[in-house]
Length: 401
Image (cartoon, rainbow, N blue to C red):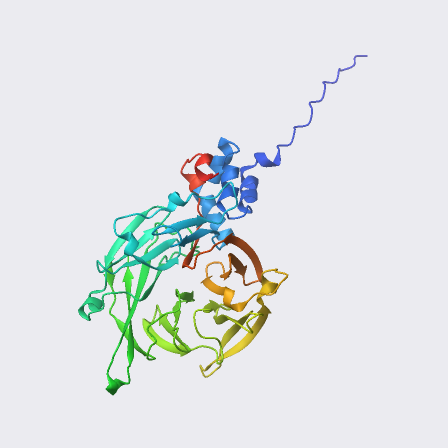
């Protein structure tokens, strides 16, 4: 009787390592923090990881996943004509010279706004505005609105720059190739007893797509209301400026092209230590530093609209400032101030001498950013900055010692 010899069984196939699956690795990379160093670190692991990290479709998904661009630094007039200070952790801080603006005459420019990856300047000596993209170093020079010049207005008192992308699902933070809009705001005081020292505000909108300014719209504002408290706040499709000398708010509806004056919350503090912010439900809110001298508080109001269209302000929250910042001792009110509110990340920036803090308003968490001894304007800059990944720069170009 013959016996067949069994062939030796082949060993079972070795399962592939999870990180060998491109789709799975993309899902892991997608969940990295949005700050530039994390994706850059992943890209230098291997050629394959770099190919996956630089894929344009993945980068679009990465922005959609995170929604809000990260803070990467501040622009200020602290050192030199215009200075960049990185807020990334060492050794990945971006060198100041990487975002350096030094054209002739820039020392006389007034920085009006910083939003959606662009910075807006007024060069009033030459009667023009400059829109600068720090990451690409692209600069657009636009003459002042002709109607402003015809009216004898030589300076833009305030303004705003914003992305005008219309594609579905667009996430701000990488808008370098997107169209943009500029809102120019100016005003003048009529020193005439017949009109009770009336002031008039003017606004016009520039479109980078058409290359022209819109017709000027105007609104009466309270006397001595020409001074504006800091930059604008964008809530929905409306820009808001606080008027420093009274309890009013100047609002510009970008769709309706309408300029109106509304009121702050009754009894809310005046001056620069207040900001229009975005409410949790996406509506308009108001924040201010208030309280006694040795116990300042951050107060926040929501604006509610009833069925008849009547607006009322409701005080939603009052928190002692030293508790927000995690400080053991109390703070003197005259040593604290609001520097900026940034709607992109729903964060407020406070100076509590001698430090600058970022406060995420939901869920009211703070972070100490840097120490400063200067009293100057700070413009926070956010971006999904992927230069260290996409442009082939070596890692050492991102590192400062």
